[in-house]
Image (cartoon, rainbow, N blue to C red; front, top):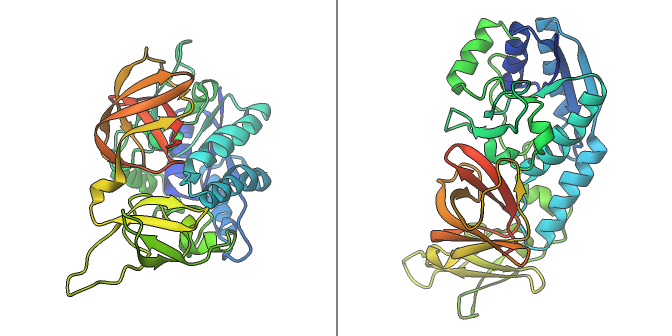
Length: 353
């Protein structure tokens, strides 16, 4: 009998995943990952752990806890704050999956006797872990509204080959129905929203606690000062709110962020949204998780979670990579550009500019 450590978050998706694996005959161990949370946010991890423990009791499986709060603070929080301070927009969820759930947690689980790990992510592995001896492919989840493959782009191939995503082939409605069938104690718990450590405050308010921000000028495309903002590090390319541009008449004009300069604490904006878009993105390297195609290669790419994929030509030159978009696209440095071939995730890179 193979042993699988399931990352129980306290939510429905991971609970159903554990129940399905037990039903399939695995030796299932429930594991809760404790992450860092700042003192000024009302504690939520204790409630999450309690729900995870209740699920383990209901399923009759062992329950373990691993404290990865220091690693989370270093690899997720500190990296995020450093990037925002430089006017770069990182993706904390990708950092968390790469360094914590499928990094430190996976290493701990395997060293503790696990043959596989599993989570409640909406994604698929083909062939499934433990089947065949070739390279596993990471595929989108069947539920297009819940597909989370984008957040998993930093996984290492050896970890992917030992990972199970039991609900990746299901719709969310099916998962909810299974939670009721398994009589799970958290079957009616609502889905979590946003970043796990932010709680009931906005990301902007969270960043203010750690990044020194002061008001600064908003300039138009010609460099004329036309308004003010709360601190350049708090914004991202394409954003159209959160700063003030007084109207000059009855008409209210919407402006979009086209440039961020944290050195001068300046935002550049335009009434034309297209001015925020670019024809190409540059990134320093590609982390290939699937087959590595011969470049140049035309693929579908996404630069943020749940955006509509667009066609792009991926090419390399002098150790750097470039994506030529089929049409101008809005993105921010620091975001991950994720490369797909239909439903398979091939690789990703962090955008430089």
